Length: 256
Image (cartoon, rainbow, N blue to C red):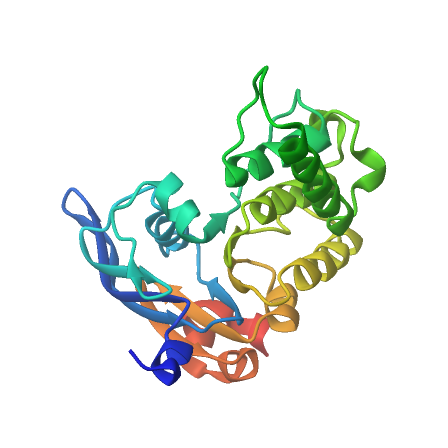
């Protein structure tokens, strides 16, 4: 494969992906390319299949048919652990952290796993020093340096979401999936979350599900609209907001 071809390889490619639960086909032949380094949103009405699509990409469900490729390598049907090791990390719609561990310890778990270091009596002090330094760096990047020693369960909701984003960063993944990262936030918290996401995903590929259209249109390079398990349209935020089919299917008055 030539260098030029490699540069053009999508960071994430879905080809004719379907997912059925019994007789119900929730995802219907989705084709989607996510370019390296872009910020891409998937939007759609409730029940469109957005969470199912994320579960397929991250390995929670195997696809019924079709292929999913990460940086040119098929990951369809792989376990979430193997997909993460291949370079993809994900956050969840419901905050998923270790409430009884400190903020620092939550982040250090991911760094330890990436370095293949386990807690033990004979662990390398030098390796642990490097792990702690990298953990502190992520802690700073997500704006939680002052809360490092606090229990994760004592953080505010928006801080817990920031911690979860930080946990995706500790794996060193190049492709980040965020599932409704601003859900339940106030306008001020949302603005802070958008600034954080923009900062920490610089140079990475971002795929997100988000209902707040102001977040989508201000943050993302392209948007895909999922309706009844199929991609209705993929385009820039401006073109999506002007698309009459999209307006009728989802955005409605919000688009105008």
